[in-house]
Amino acid sequence: MGCEQRRGKLDAYVDGELDPAEARTLGEHLRGCAACAADALERVQMKRAVQMAGKRYAASADLRNRITKSFATKPRRHLSPWQILAAPALVLLILSVVTNFYLGRENARRQRVYSELADLHVAALASASPVDVVSTDRHTVKPWFQGKIPFTFNLPELQGSEFTLLGGRVTYFAQTPGAHLIYQMRKHEISVFIFQDRPFEDRREETAGLPSGAAHALSFNEENWTQNGLRYFVIGDVGADDIQALSKLLRDAA
Image 1: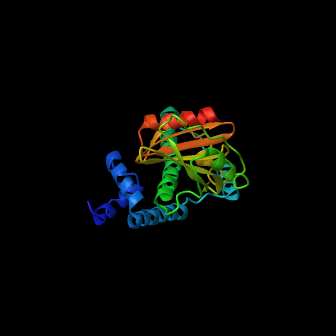
Image 2: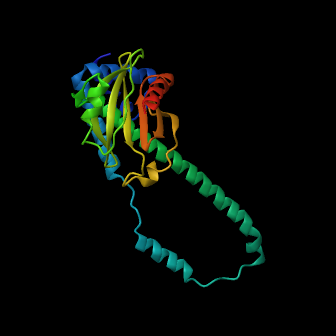
Image 3: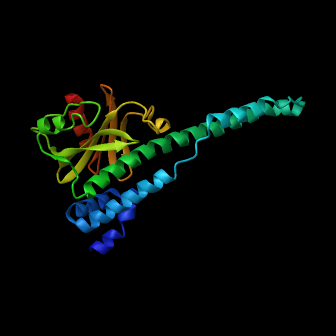
């Protein structure tokens, strides 16, 4: 398959619409083709720009107060017997709609977080310089972050494992700085993101209470957890068992 045919699949790749086998094949091609990698990076940047431009409007506290007062000042009406009998059914209907809306919103909230992290993962791998500190030595990579992010963390010893540390870089999620580490396993790259575990400034409704555990984020497997005041995300196009193995090493190191 030539580059032109592969470029036709880049939009589906960055949107997570390819099946895992196709995503892995295209990901391997991007790591060896600078032209296609540049096109993938451009698409990711455009996607993030559209997401930022499309943020929903948040009503001000003053507007909410005026709406609340307008309801409070309306005179009460006397209900007919039929309206009284219909009230419980209406309450059940409203509860059902609200519950379904809440569950749908929660799922969409998680997917937005995972999608943005997947974008950061793809953008880093498509970049000519995926990491700013290039080293397989954890004792070199960890000190490099001192003074660049407002927290510290531990990295695992990888001797005897299938993982290799490639390096790291500072990344930002919702204007919050964090560490982005890249590991390699059988020619596949895995991203590890570490942030302070607190509601991010403009994304409180999306990140607060984000459940820990494994997930499938677009074309990638992902796992996240909190430990020692930090939130860890591990994401890559390897199997779920491999993601869990690297996550266990990170947990034990912490």
